Image 1: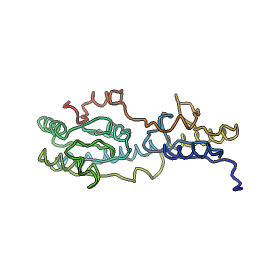
Image 2 (image 1 turned 120 degrees about the horizontal axis):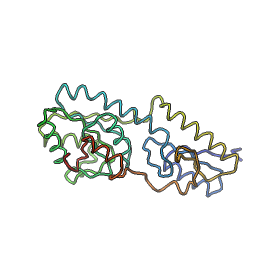
Image 3 (image 1 turned 45 degrees about the vertical axis):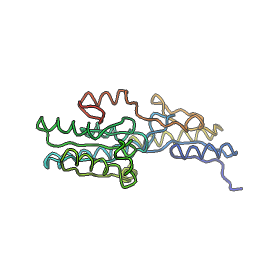
Length: 251
């Protein structure tokens, strides 16, 4: 009745769950994964993530000058929901000293011990990257609704370390702006693959990137599982090897 030949669902886990329900009700649907959180398990990366990562990394880069010249603890809160990909990769790329992500429990005490160690070595500034979905320590959980987690963590660090802490919450600027070349190319590749799926009658499937190749999976196999950072994975090990603290131990 509506004259719709097919629907292309573009989005993350929530959008693809809706697409799956529409497919089960008889609609001709294919999926294209897109979210800055990079948390959809069926694809290696989603377009939107690289652009958000560039924005967050640039912010961390620019914080360095003020942090070092004013001898401050500077905290940058980034997005990512329940996955720490933006926080982890922006923290490494931007030269952060502390990275807090949902996948690794932390304590304020451990962070302050690390700050004190830096001070003892003559490094009178510290840059902390905080992912919005972090699991707060017990003493801060009751205040979570009082504001951004970055402010809660920053206030706690400042009080315990007796240092001035400045907090920058990047918010939705990570979700907009000019897409990176990588995202533009990946989106184009996904778009072409989605149209090809429609032409082949491959409804109920979602395009994805695997081993640098564009493939497709059933939408049912792509939703309901969040792709999170492996706390023991190579990326975290690399960060620890260059001296980055995750608040769970003193380097």
